[in-house]
Amino acid sequence: MVIGTIQVVKVRDVDYKTAKKEVLGYYRNYREAYPHEVAEGLELDYELVCGIVDELKASKRLEVIK
Image 1: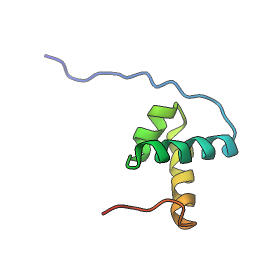
Image 2 (image 1 turned 45 degrees about the vertical axis):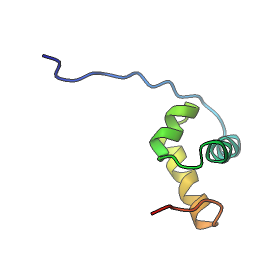
Image 3 (image 1 turned 60 degrees about the horizontal axis):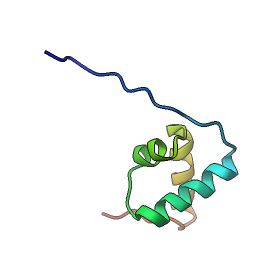
Image 4 (image 1 turned 90 degrees about the vertical axis):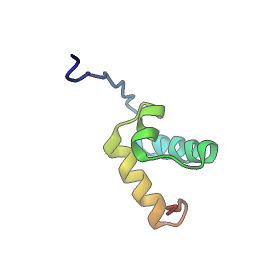
């Protein structure tokens, strides 16, 4: 019986400006994604990606699809 698994997540150390460009590029390519998917796909810190996504939504550069 498997109780749980551990996943090692690799996180790159990049500055905010670079991370923001990468997040925008990710959404241009994939259109829809949750922040955790973006963080994992780009190997960026989840909290950093959440902050960038919030900023992009506030500036209307990213739209929430309901």
